[in-house]
Image 1 (cartoon, rainbow, N blue to C red):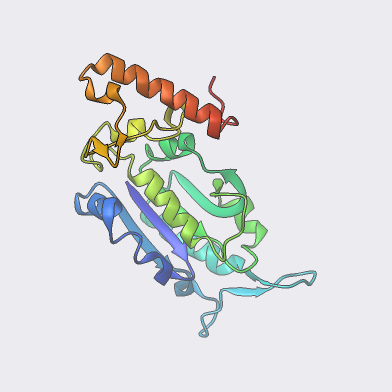
Image 2 (cartoon, rainbow, N blue to C red):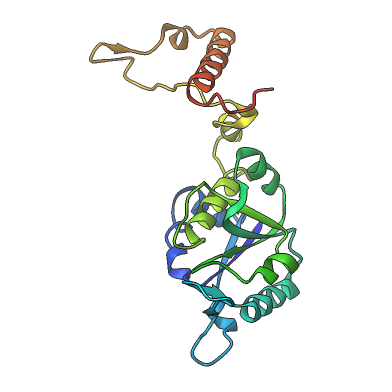
Length: 225
Protein backbone atom coordinates (compact mmCIF):
# COMPACT_ATOMS: atom_id res chain seq x y z
CA UNK A 1 0.00 0.00 0.00
CA UNK A 2 1.11 3.54 -0.78
CA UNK A 3 -0.10 6.53 1.26
CA UNK A 4 0.79 10.14 0.44
CA UNK A 5 0.06 12.92 2.93
CA UNK A 6 -0.23 16.61 2.04
CA UNK A 7 0.33 18.99 4.96
CA UNK A 8 1.55 22.43 5.97
CA UNK A 9 3.24 20.94 9.07
CA UNK A 10 5.20 17.85 8.01
CA UNK A 11 7.18 17.99 11.27
CA UNK A 12 4.09 16.82 13.16
CA UNK A 13 4.12 13.56 11.21
CA UNK A 14 7.76 12.62 11.52
CA UNK A 15 7.58 10.63 14.74
CA UNK A 16 4.36 8.58 14.35
CA UNK A 17 5.67 6.67 11.33
CA UNK A 18 9.18 6.02 12.65
CA UNK A 19 8.24 3.62 15.42
CA UNK A 20 6.38 0.41 16.25
CA UNK A 21 4.05 -1.35 13.80
CA UNK A 22 3.99 1.30 11.07
CA UNK A 23 7.80 1.45 11.04
CA UNK A 24 7.97 -2.34 10.66
CA UNK A 25 5.36 -2.24 7.89
CA UNK A 26 7.58 0.15 5.94
CA UNK A 27 10.70 -1.89 6.61
CA UNK A 28 8.91 -4.95 5.22
CA UNK A 29 7.97 -2.92 2.11
CA UNK A 30 4.30 -3.58 2.83
CA UNK A 31 3.52 0.10 3.32
CA UNK A 32 5.01 3.31 1.95
CA UNK A 33 4.18 6.65 3.58
CA UNK A 34 5.33 9.86 1.91
CA UNK A 35 4.80 13.29 3.44
CA UNK A 36 4.62 16.32 1.16
CA UNK A 37 4.89 19.94 2.25
CA UNK A 38 2.09 22.00 0.72
CA UNK A 39 4.37 25.03 0.62
CA UNK A 40 6.21 23.37 -2.26
CA UNK A 41 3.19 24.52 -4.29
CA UNK A 42 2.88 27.96 -2.64
CA UNK A 43 1.44 30.83 -4.68
CA UNK A 44 4.41 33.14 -4.12
CA UNK A 45 8.02 33.32 -2.94
CA UNK A 46 6.87 33.83 0.65
CA UNK A 47 5.38 30.35 0.80
CA UNK A 48 1.77 31.53 1.01
CA UNK A 49 -0.84 28.76 1.01
CA UNK A 50 -3.65 30.48 2.96
CA UNK A 51 -5.66 33.71 2.81
CA UNK A 52 -8.55 35.54 4.45
CA UNK A 53 -12.00 34.11 3.85
CA UNK A 54 -14.52 35.87 1.62
CA UNK A 55 -17.40 37.39 3.54
CA UNK A 56 -15.24 38.16 6.55
CA UNK A 57 -14.80 36.24 9.75
CA UNK A 58 -11.93 35.06 11.92
CA UNK A 59 -9.36 32.58 10.71
CA UNK A 60 -7.47 31.87 7.52
CA UNK A 61 -8.47 29.40 4.79
CA UNK A 62 -6.16 27.12 2.81
CA UNK A 63 -6.21 28.36 -0.78
CA UNK A 64 -7.48 26.61 -3.91
CA UNK A 65 -4.41 27.10 -6.08
CA UNK A 66 -1.69 25.39 -4.02
CA UNK A 67 -4.00 22.51 -3.09
CA UNK A 68 -5.18 21.95 -6.66
CA UNK A 69 -1.65 22.13 -8.04
CA UNK A 70 -0.35 19.74 -5.39
CA UNK A 71 -3.13 17.19 -5.91
CA UNK A 72 -2.77 17.31 -9.69
CA UNK A 73 1.01 17.06 -9.50
CA UNK A 74 0.93 14.04 -7.18
CA UNK A 75 -1.83 12.42 -9.26
CA UNK A 76 0.45 12.39 -12.30
CA UNK A 77 2.68 9.89 -10.55
CA UNK A 78 -0.03 7.48 -9.45
CA UNK A 79 -3.76 6.93 -9.61
CA UNK A 80 -5.30 7.35 -6.17
CA UNK A 81 -8.12 5.05 -5.09
CA UNK A 82 -9.26 7.74 -2.65
CA UNK A 83 -8.32 11.36 -1.97
CA UNK A 84 -9.26 11.79 1.68
CA UNK A 85 -9.77 15.05 3.55
CA UNK A 86 -9.44 14.84 7.34
CA UNK A 87 -12.14 17.10 8.76
CA UNK A 88 -14.41 17.26 11.84
CA UNK A 89 -17.51 17.22 9.64
CA UNK A 90 -16.47 14.09 7.75
CA UNK A 91 -17.74 10.54 8.14
CA UNK A 92 -16.83 9.12 11.55
CA UNK A 93 -13.91 6.70 11.30
CA UNK A 94 -14.78 3.17 12.36
CA UNK A 95 -13.41 -0.33 11.90
CA UNK A 96 -15.53 -0.99 8.81
CA UNK A 97 -14.04 2.04 7.05
CA UNK A 98 -10.53 1.01 8.12
CA UNK A 99 -11.08 -2.51 6.79
CA UNK A 100 -12.27 -1.14 3.44
CA UNK A 101 -9.41 1.33 3.07
CA UNK A 102 -6.82 -1.33 3.97
CA UNK A 103 -7.74 -3.10 0.72
CA UNK A 104 -6.84 -0.07 -1.40
CA UNK A 105 -3.48 0.42 -3.11
CA UNK A 106 -3.01 4.19 -3.23
CA UNK A 107 -4.38 6.86 -0.89
CA UNK A 108 -3.82 10.61 -0.70
CA UNK A 109 -4.59 12.27 2.64
CA UNK A 110 -5.19 16.02 2.83
CA UNK A 111 -4.57 17.60 6.24
CA UNK A 112 -6.68 20.67 6.85
CA UNK A 113 -5.43 23.58 8.93
CA UNK A 114 -6.53 27.03 10.06
CA UNK A 115 -10.28 27.31 9.27
CA UNK A 116 -10.09 24.49 6.74
CA UNK A 117 -9.71 24.30 2.97
CA UNK A 118 -11.47 26.17 0.18
CA UNK A 119 -14.79 24.42 -0.46
CA UNK A 120 -14.05 24.09 -4.18
CA UNK A 121 -11.28 21.61 -3.42
CA UNK A 122 -13.78 19.48 -1.51
CA UNK A 123 -16.23 19.67 -4.39
CA UNK A 124 -13.82 18.84 -7.22
CA UNK A 125 -11.02 16.69 -5.82
CA UNK A 126 -11.91 15.06 -2.52
CA UNK A 127 -13.50 11.61 -2.81
CA UNK A 128 -13.91 10.85 0.90
CA UNK A 129 -14.05 12.92 4.08
CA UNK A 130 -13.19 11.36 7.45
CA UNK A 131 -13.41 12.55 11.06
CA UNK A 132 -11.76 10.78 13.99
CA UNK A 133 -14.22 12.21 16.50
CA UNK A 134 -16.68 14.92 17.41
CA UNK A 135 -14.09 17.47 18.45
CA UNK A 136 -11.76 19.94 16.74
CA UNK A 137 -7.98 19.59 16.43
CA UNK A 138 -5.55 22.32 15.41
CA UNK A 139 -5.03 20.52 12.12
CA UNK A 140 -5.54 17.24 10.31
CA UNK A 141 -2.03 15.89 10.91
CA UNK A 142 -2.83 13.93 14.07
CA UNK A 143 -5.99 12.61 12.45
CA UNK A 144 -3.95 11.48 9.45
CA UNK A 145 -1.54 9.64 11.76
CA UNK A 146 -4.47 7.88 13.43
CA UNK A 147 -5.92 6.88 10.07
CA UNK A 148 -2.60 5.53 8.76
CA UNK A 149 -2.07 3.49 11.92
CA UNK A 150 -5.62 2.11 11.81
CA UNK A 151 -5.26 1.08 8.17
CA UNK A 152 -1.63 -0.01 8.22
CA UNK A 153 -1.97 -2.64 10.93
CA UNK A 154 -4.64 -4.41 8.85
CA UNK A 155 -2.36 -4.98 5.85
CA UNK A 156 -1.56 -8.71 5.59
CA UNK A 157 1.91 -9.44 6.91
CA UNK A 158 2.23 -6.28 9.01
CA UNK A 159 1.35 -7.90 12.33
CA UNK A 160 3.48 -10.84 13.46
CA UNK A 161 0.32 -12.80 14.31
CA UNK A 162 -1.80 -12.81 11.15
CA UNK A 163 -4.99 -13.39 13.16
CA UNK A 164 -4.41 -10.65 15.73
CA UNK A 165 -6.27 -7.88 13.93
CA UNK A 166 -9.29 -10.15 13.44
CA UNK A 167 -9.93 -10.11 17.18
CA UNK A 168 -9.52 -6.38 17.79
CA UNK A 169 -12.34 -4.36 19.30
CA UNK A 170 -15.03 -3.36 16.79
CA UNK A 171 -14.39 -6.27 14.44
CA UNK A 172 -17.83 -7.92 14.15
CA UNK A 173 -19.22 -4.87 16.02
CA UNK A 174 -18.02 -6.18 19.37
CA UNK A 175 -15.54 -4.92 21.94
CA UNK A 176 -12.62 -7.23 22.63
CA UNK A 177 -12.86 -9.53 25.68
CA UNK A 178 -10.62 -9.12 28.77
CA UNK A 179 -7.06 -10.41 28.41
CA UNK A 180 -4.63 -11.77 31.03
CA UNK A 181 -0.99 -12.84 31.24
CA UNK A 182 1.44 -14.17 33.87
CA UNK A 183 1.45 -14.50 36.80
CA UNK A 184 -1.69 -16.57 37.26
CA UNK A 185 -2.17 -15.18 40.77
CA UNK A 186 -1.13 -11.59 41.52
CA UNK A 187 -1.93 -10.30 45.02
CA UNK A 188 -4.82 -12.73 45.16
CA UNK A 189 -6.23 -11.45 41.85
CA UNK A 190 -6.58 -14.63 39.81
CA UNK A 191 -6.94 -15.34 36.10
CA UNK A 192 -10.38 -16.86 35.30
CA UNK A 193 -10.23 -20.66 35.59
CA UNK A 194 -11.60 -21.18 32.08
CA UNK A 195 -8.51 -19.56 30.53
CA UNK A 196 -6.31 -22.05 32.36
CA UNK A 197 -8.43 -25.06 31.39
CA UNK A 198 -6.84 -25.79 28.02
CA UNK A 199 -10.33 -26.36 26.59
CA UNK A 200 -10.30 -24.13 23.50
CA UNK A 201 -14.02 -24.52 22.86
CA UNK A 202 -14.84 -23.30 26.37
CA UNK A 203 -12.30 -20.49 26.06
CA UNK A 204 -13.80 -19.33 22.75
CA UNK A 205 -17.30 -19.44 24.22
CA UNK A 206 -16.15 -17.47 27.28
CA UNK A 207 -14.47 -14.83 25.14
CA UNK A 208 -17.56 -14.38 23.01
CA UNK A 209 -19.75 -14.11 26.11
CA UNK A 210 -17.39 -11.51 27.60
CA UNK A 211 -17.33 -9.53 24.34
CA UNK A 212 -21.11 -9.46 24.20
CA UNK A 213 -21.38 -8.40 27.84
CA UNK A 214 -18.68 -5.73 27.56
CA UNK A 215 -20.25 -4.29 24.42
CA UNK A 216 -23.70 -4.20 26.00
CA UNK A 217 -22.38 -2.55 29.17
CA UNK A 218 -19.95 -0.06 27.64
CA UNK A 219 -21.07 0.59 24.09
CA UNK A 220 -24.78 -0.24 23.72
CA UNK A 221 -24.83 2.16 20.75
CA UNK A 222 -22.89 -0.30 18.58
CA UNK A 223 -25.07 -2.11 16.08
CA UNK A 224 -24.77 -5.83 16.81
CA UNK A 225 -27.09 -7.08 14.15
